[in-house]
Amino acid sequence: MIMVEKNELIELILSALLFFIMLMIYRNSNKGISSYWVIGISVLMLNSVSTVVEGFVFPAFFNFIEHLCFPIAVLLFLAASIKLYKTRNI
Image (cartoon, rainbow, N blue to C red; front, side, top):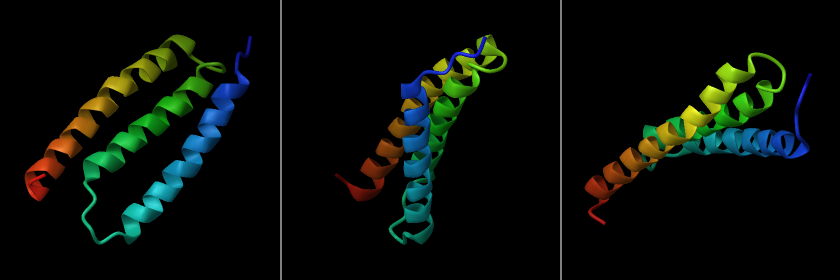
């Protein structure tokens, strides 16, 4: 049985929109945005995709991926923050 909730689809659509906007900003930026930020946002995008996909196929696998993405993203954002702190002397 297919289980996809409306809020998950809305989250996926908004995440995709913000993901592509962020990629355009990253590509056009000359301020040296850390690649950790981009990878962290990409992992959160993977989280949104796996949330929707788990309603269609391999629910246990995609549920695992969904719950694994958050700690990975947190570690990436922490690494980006540390890198920013060290390079900008905040």
